[in-house]
Length: 410
Ligand code: PLP
Image 1 (spheres, rainbow, N blue to C red):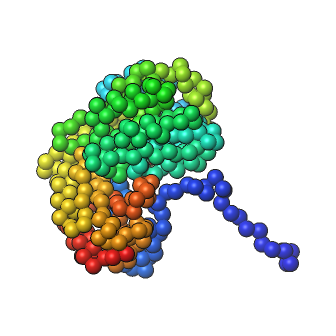
Image 2 (cartoon, helix red, strand yellow):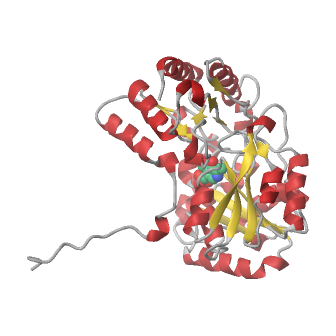
Image 3 (cartoon, protein in one colour):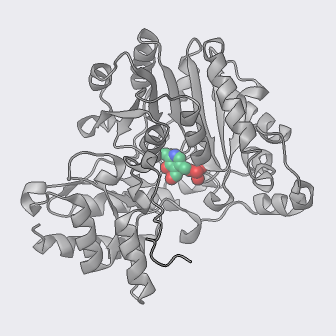
């Protein structure tokens, strides 16, 4: 009997103490409660294309259906040979040097591989340079692995490019790697070769590894071209991440990969660690891997969305104008992906706490955005909008925001 004894309480691991992942945090929980009680919430918070009417090319679904019965068993830990061959060709097209089939790993989304790549690398106290703002999984995984995410500033005044001097200042004896997110979530920035070159130079000077999250590399607008930083660093060790969640509108299938390149000799032990963790998770979802070859080699429907007349392009044009026309709001025009990261005039609105701002907006206008602090942005003056919804919906959202801000003072 348990009578007379106190009930044992199961707490969470202290490893989670400093882990933050607010893109699905308290404000989203509040939105879920509102929805559960029958309130319609206009959601501009998650970069998930399918629910907004974006569909993967039919051939991708057809391919998976055809192959499903052949995908009942485990695959090689790193992934199917055909999938990795297709990724290898893709890496070659991007001029990534010294890529071999055993340096390509598939994952259940890029997410799994971010976690794995940081877990295999970090000892307590090791430092990794991570952008601010960032896609917060990077900071969370560095932290969970016992490392310290040291945030370098991306500069809104310069198209949200990384501030190289700030990066330089933050390098210490414990710094192991630089993370870049290019194209960027949440800012929509695309880094030109001159900026990438400065990062490569810094990494070379201080012997740092480079992790480059390029999941949006096929969602680039205005005729610009994405350059993989790994293509500029054959003498350094680089890990490049991409996947099909965004380019093929199948975030739910969980298809991602990472590619090791450059000087692998200097990372031999690390690669051993990566291989061990990769073996331990057995393999990534095999039906999802089975479509990689078709997806990368087949019809790139995303190309129709990112040119004038295409949905993502036109929605960007709309949201950029609409947000900038609201008094007290200004935003840099995104060049890639489907996010915009506007600035709020904090003096005008008296904002001290951006989570409170997000909650107030949610409760008053039933409009859900993510506050800047959710992206490790350390001032309460930004928020992220996902502009995947159709223009009519974005119009409704910007009207709600305008109305809200016209009387808001925190
Ligand atoms: N990296 C970035 C920059 C992202 O924005 C996302 C998703 O939003 C991911 C990685 C994770 O993508 P997935 O796990 O679906 O491949």
